[in-house]
Image 1 (cartoon, rainbow, N blue to C red):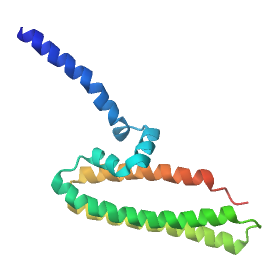
Image 2 (tube, helix red, strand yellow; image 1 turned 45 degrees about the vertical axis):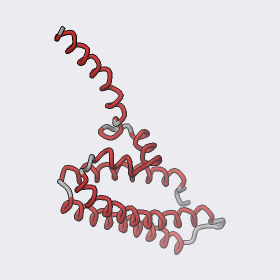
Image 3 (cartoon, rainbow, N blue to C red; image 1 turned 90 degrees about the vertical axis):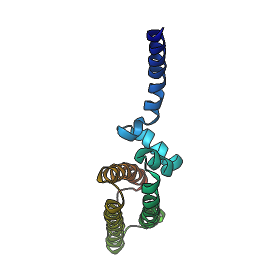
Length: 158
C-alpha cells in the first residue's frame, strides 16, 4: 500500500512539473520572443519572478530598479526624438544635421551605460552578486529587443 501511495505521489509530481518549468522557460533560456512578450506585458512581474527576491532584498531592489527605469526612459526619449526627426525630415540630409544626429545617438547610449553602471554598483551593495548578474543579464536581453525594435524603424541615412 505504501509503495502504491508513493507511486501516485511521484506520478502527480511528474505531471505537475512540466507546466511550472514551461511557465518560466524564457527566463533561463533564450526564448527571446517569450521574453519580449513578458517584458511588454508586465516587466516588473517578469523581473520579480526571475529574481525571486526575499522581502528584505525587494525593499532594497525596487527603488533602485525604479530609478534606473526612469534613467532608461530618458535615454529612450533621446533616441525617439532622433528617430522621429529623421523620419519626418522631408528634405535632403545636411552634414550638420547628420553630425548632430550621430552625437545625439551616442549621447543616448552613453547616458544609458552610465545609468546601468550606477545601477550595478548600487545593486552589488544591496544583493548577492549572482542575483545582480542575473538581473543585469535579463535587463540586457530586454534592452536588446528594444534596440531591435528601434532599428527596424530607423532607416539608414542616405
